[in-house]
Image 1 (cartoon, rainbow, N blue to C red):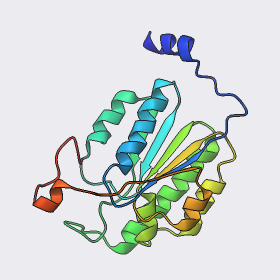
Image 2: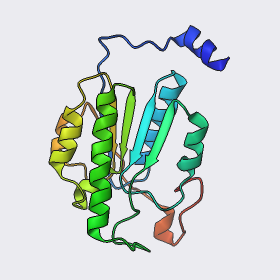
Image 3: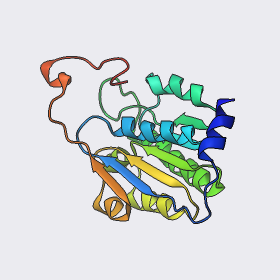
Image 4: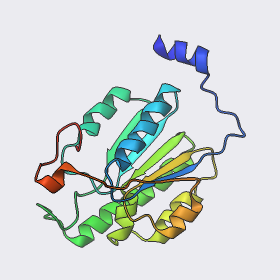
Amino acid sequence: MLKLLVNAFMGTDRKASDKGLIVVYTGNGKGKTTAALGIALRSVGHGYKVWMIQFIKGEWYYGELTSSRRLEPEFELVAAGKGFVGILDDDHSLVEHQMAAKNAVILAKNKITSGEYDVIILDEINYAIKLNLISIEDVIGILNSNTLQTTIVLTGNYAPPEIIDMADLVTEMREIKHPYRSGQKAKKGIDY
């Protein structure tokens, strides 16, 4: 019933002239994935289809893994990574991380060219470049595969200048203060 009301009030049909955007959330501050999830929430509210792939996260539990299911079928999330590379309890080789990231690139291209989605979020893809899991050419190839109206959101620190140049919207999150610096651990519902 709610979807019918939203459709009647807002309309969900996108005009053929609507151009998808390239949106980048980068910087050393917290909030890049959170901002991308905000776009997902807003888009689902308009009846748009959203697909999100996480290039690094994959073996730990994050709240969005459960909350995203509440937004199905309009929102789909895939955790394709093997976890954080080279830190904490990482027990995967660099080659395993690279293979997971390469498979995520292929999956992202397939989803973009399918024409099925209005928004595609490439979470932590900038980190994947920085960590040499994928190349800048891989990411440019993903972006160039979008000949449709799909908006593509890229997150992660260290966004390369080439990606920033291609983007329509770039926001840099800058850390001013973080509880981690005073010894507080990551907080459930805030950090994961």
